[in-house]
Length: 423
Image (tube, rainbow, N blue to C red; front, side, top):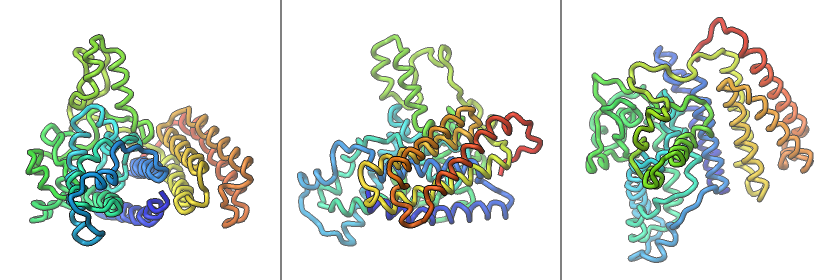
């Protein structure tokens, strides 16, 4: 946990700088593909995922280390060859786990968050799941285990492989010549994120595009079919925690309402989007029928709400950085209390971004949690040793945040906005 937290402290500012550069470049080219409020939601999703991972809130039924101990033909050291094998096998693993996440109803729940943005930009790469609490696909790493690749090599290569998928989430890089035949490029991945019928469930590869060509899921970006992004059952919320469980909630509801026991069981393993017969008529859900004729969610917002949301996510990143940098010092079980505070924080300000009246309740709950932590421990997890008066700073910030939320809900949202904009 501690090592991964240190890696994220280094990676996070790099990602943020690149997101800012993309935003500035888009404004300069008069083709801004990264509305601020969408980026706030995406970064917030990345925070929830990283907190979940750092806290170790996931379960692996078959560990890679166990597989190596049982089936390795021979054992390797951590060297260039073992890292190359690990990277190649992890990419194979990534292709199939990614493909199954698109094709099987139950597994789509953990992946829908990544596709939920109706934009395509670097920030949306950070939309990663918290709903993936169980890893079922470790068996796909069997080739590496047979070749005796050390578990430490896999542990280092996995996050590196994930980080290398960041760069191609952009509309500003067009087709890249001969690299289109080898690597996953922005063009390939625009196809993957698109909801056009021509593009659905294509290009599942993560680094090397030849997996799609080998297994029949490749589709080139067509000049006459501009990709339209999102999910066919739009999330209609900026709240990443709610998005993480929307599809699961529909599956549970449909399984409960299904009259046939066979449907109650098989719905989980049917192709993504499958529902029992006549359910679309009996229990309709919002679905995009014409990809070129639908309203994007929350595109018109006041500057005040947008800038306040940006402020909130930046302050949250400061809280998260302190957690990641002090995991050992904060210790168990306090890191879980801290992680819970972060999740409530994100839930609260994204509810406000959704213009929900319940944002006041969530913000009040967040204030009480923080006040309780400071009252019980006498400090914010040792922060006063570094920053004097940190208790007063945190409580002051939370007081301003609560009052601002009350203002938005009770006054601002009820006042006609003369010039709503999409920054």
